[in-house]
Image (tube, rainbow, N blue to C red; front, side, top):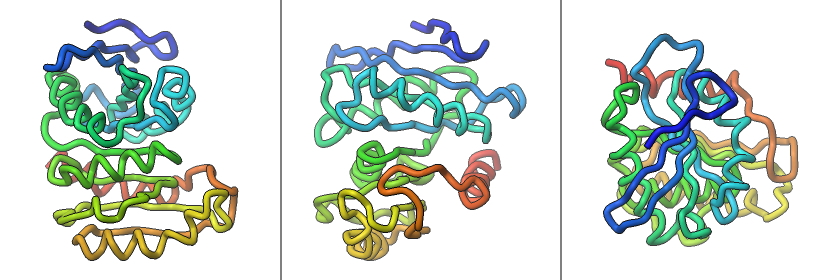
Length: 218
C-alpha cells in the first residue's frame, strides 16, 4: 500500500508486508532533481529503537540524500526494536519488496546510517555484503568485530569525530582493520568537529556516492 508523504509532491509512505506476517512502514524520499527514474535504492537506517519518532528525525538526511540521485527509504521497526540481530534480517526482505516499484532499480542497495543507525548499517552489511553497493556510517561502530567475515570488496565510508562521546574514535582503528581484513574497501577518517554527530561533508561524500551510483546505471 502506497500513501503520499506531505513534504514533497512525489514522496510517499509504503506499507511493506513481510513473510512473517509483520508490516513495516517505510518513508520514501524521491529525487526531485535527478530525472524521472528509476533510481538506485538507499536504505537510511534510523538510530535508537528504530521507531517512527526516530525515523522522522532522519527526514532531513533523507531529503539531502535523495537530491544526490538515490531513492531513499527509511524503514520503521515494527516491534520497537533496532534493526540488528534477527531484526536486521528484515532489511533484505524490505528491499526486495520496494524494488517491485517501477521507479526503483532492482539489484543492490546502499546502506546509510548516523550513530546507532550507522552501526545497524554496518551489521546488516556484514550479514550479507553481496546485497549492497556500500555502507555510509557517519558515524557507526560494531561492538562485536567477529560479525565481520568476507565483506566481498564492499565499499565502506566511515567518519567518526575525534573525542567521540562514546569513544568510537578510540575503537575506530580496530574496526577499520577488521573491515580491511575482511576485504572491505574502506574510506575512513577522523573529524575534528562535533562530539558524535556532525554535518556531512558533501564535497567528500558526493564523489564517493557518485562512483557507486554510476556503477548501478552502467
